[in-house]
Length: 341
Image 1: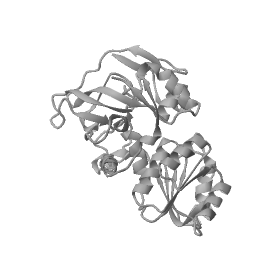
Image 2: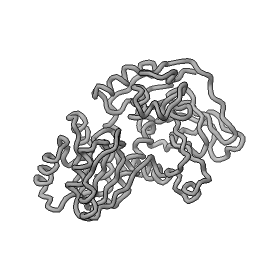
Image 3: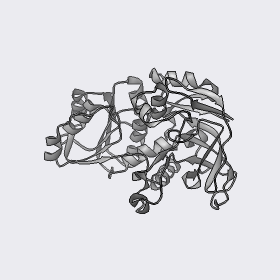
């Protein structure tokens, strides 16, 4: 079968013919129809420090995908062949304290699809049946392909009560853009988002941001003044991995505000912890999706009017993957769908 493979250390990927995977007793074999490129895939493509530490070639990459179940293992009874599914990309152990307590997203033994095991940038992928999420007919393929990153946005945004609150989002990548739409859908009053790229801010405006402004403390202060806010933001979602952005969050957070951190920083950072203490901030780290409550909420919001398709900027054939990756790295694309089937 055709698959995008990280065949060796170094920049780039190769489209190669690899053996079709076989499902184990508790697995499903999925014929992939569409996939989407994630920031993690860009790290792997560029072979940065994170990729060098976490991935051991050769491996088929990709963890955002949708497809149709073609075969099931002998122990699988709740999913049938022919079911359209998206894949939860975090495979957890199921028996550690957090897994047994219903907090699988905090499993210490998490294995990443497309990172530590073969992923979905391929004609076929195998995952545990419990990781396959059936997709209702109301959700189109291109949206189903990005349920994984939508789940990150849902997990982050819905960590705190948004109704009537003023929200600051730092980082207008696809997840930040989707978070704008979620905050609006969930009843936030004002949603202000920052980024260094105007093209990203424009998409965020289409996704429901009250104001989308250049990153920086002066811009955030000006936005507060324009919106006649006098007490700071009630909720902050940090999605950029920028030390300066985190400083902006702490500086402009209201006393008693709640902060969710999704963006990963590429180095240790300094932050004014005294401000966080004196303001009584609640800070929560976010990793992946809550399995599987986040998935239920994401699909329910899509079925009740949430629109996220503006984040999708390009469709390309799997064979044209290099064009897609280079467009993303150049800042010319937002979310790219790979047409696999």
